[in-house]
Length: 113
Length: 311
Image (cartoon, rainbow over all chains, first blue to last red; front, side, top):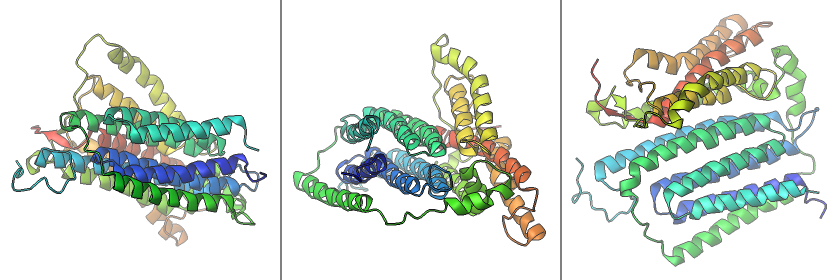
């Protein structure tokens, strides 16, 4: 297949990573694992940007620098979101004593310290 | 045709990504995630995006990994055996995700006839900025508002993290437990690596104008060195009320904003650089940003204040 070049392979990899990330986000019950899954999902989306950038190679550059710069910005923002999510989780554990998102953990039973 | 290396790399990335998702222990999942990030940065090199590869390795894999490891260490007592989700949910989720992957793969396999690219217009006017690295040009010239706001997001997220501490601990000390053993390899490394690491960080920022590198990547290396020294117990974690710390957190965004406002008076446009001064101004912004990014990333990793602190 002529279109099966290296860029396409990475594009398919990105598509699979997005699916994997969403799957992990849905099926993993632990909040920290969900945060991890969101990071895998994000990296798949970023890789898709990389594929688009590589296809836009022109003017003597290996790739379009605009999507590449957007990915750098995206990685930093994704880190900020991860840090905030982790802090929320740690606070949840401090208040409720359990790292769970289950609804049946009754608030009246383990009301905050 | 795709080379054997690329196919192997993609298979490895997918396998390691799946391993991280399905690993039984959260701790293992995070360690595997760090490996995953490093493999992914190799993919970025193969896609001719070395700047992104450095960012992914430093921030996406390294600093995020440290943040998650620190979290899992605090959560270990609550890391109960996960209740397995119902198989009907698993199957539905599997079908849903396969559909998403298939539609994205379809988009990849049917590329547009004429690839869209802004590369020619970037290269056309890159000369005026005095920069040699087109990605740095996009970050600090054409899309500098994005870059400014992203720095603000990083600081805002830190304020939000600090705000999650109980009221009485505002301004207190983050509880990063130093490694207790006195004569360990860690202590030795924390004494010998930082001088080299700090040089590497400053170098990455400095060459960022012309070669792959820049404030983000350099700042992440500086953050790693600071965290190393703090974990080894050789430097105290500063209380979040420290004025020096808060100044270091905001100096980068403030200088960036000030130069942006200066642009209104000198050129009539926010964030525009006066002709001939673009490069020195960008270097000034990047230098202060490197410090701010390094400090902000490190403070994100050590987390919210957990101990009261009296001066």
